Image 1 (spheres, protein in one colour):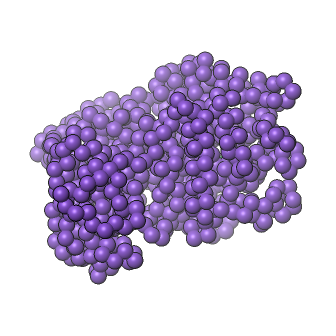
Image 2 (tube, rainbow, N blue to C red):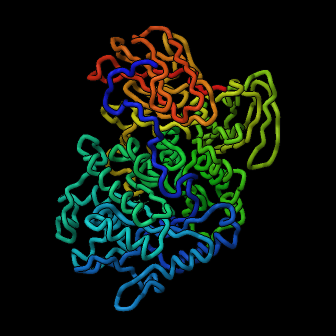
Image 3 (cartoon, rainbow, N blue to C red):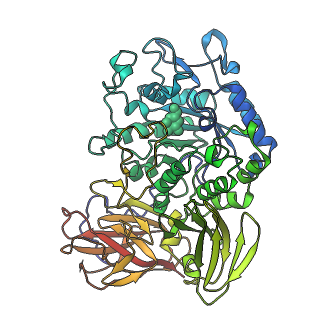
Length: 616
Ligand code: GLA
């Protein structure tokens, strides 16, 4: 056995899968939420009507299960016991004896319908509606203390109430109360709410207390575990990509919002899509990227825009986003229900392998997303982002299939089949996404590139020292700000994170002039955990990526099987040829890929695990 090298922080091989596996998040949750349909004007009748349509229309049998109440349900926190009181004017079945309201009658009804029930809170003292206005409908009432309906200071009490006593199965926890309740909030200045010195500065990671934010959400996760010994819960973290949540949500919860709120506008959909699209390695069964709820049915995605509605739905499905309908289903047309109920598209989202689609082709105009399915087949979405018709070419190579053998495609919207070798021209209407299941002859028979199995890769450490906002995300007009101010800057720390088939800053993978169309690009001083089911060997060609701006550093690559060092390279400098790193990993259920810089104080360079694969 090789002697393990000196250990740097976070790079120590553990021989275990460390990403979150608690709760019911093995597949992306599906359901309905009141917010996009009704904002805070939510009531029991609307919730139950939607639930009934979900059942009657057959959507429930296709997987839509969670019926989630968002902001607007609360009346106040009673004093001095701190028990939350439901707004019974809008949720009459919650009225109980002596003012002790309960959602149990409502959750019982939902459960009796075969559904699950979700509730909403905030990690601060106050809600988003209180923090940012949101029209003011159904804001909490009473004294200053009574209006403090958020979890802060009450995490254990509230989680026990919501899950043990009221019987909920899902909670979305927003972060407005720790973001916008500083002394400059007009409602704080006028004494309506207490000051909460913000833990999050949305525009500055350096002014955000990332560890304090994480600790609060971890407290919720711990309480959820205590209140749900059967593990029947979903924990949805709603921090809109702030507080470097990308780097820690996969340790704490099942879902993590990657951006600010979606809107029923095309540009806004692009923004939210982009916030998750290049983060395939940060999603795996148990913890998913959440680009926000669906807006299928409204605005640019309404019954007059079915092409756009299909695109939005297809993209969310192939990215393994939660499929949470945000639409007043009482208004739904058969066309819209058919989109939400497309079993073939839903099956992509719910595929057991849990691989978020990877970008095989990426431009501002056209994108090709490829998802590897549990049966070894592929799904591909070819997406025209523009408002003009566009001719695309799908290559067998995009699918990691060989050129010479035939490729079979089945269109999951039209049912049409076609076959090609080498390349297939495809005409796309404005805003259209064509989605196919594809079968062909794999370039790597009997093995899988790691970039084909992102759901089995956990980026335990990604080497980022100073989180930076992501400049690759479509920036649009924020509907609630209009064109006031200076427009939207790059947001959401995560730029430079680990990528499938790309270097961390978006370049093509390349070592000393040699390109790799398959592989993992990541910064050095990183550690990736890979689940190995039945493969015998690991193999990669490794080196410093040519996209590195620093040519002075040296990096060593190490490979571990169940925590034991099984292979390593010598120290490699910039411009040195790729070295082979391969080892027998038979029977090792966790393979770890560690790369470290010779000088740990340097800002780590991008490295490439070229053609990294598990093989028979
Ligand atoms: C935030 C969230 C939304 C919604 C509202 C409710 O903006 O991001 O999804 O929950 O709060 O006020």
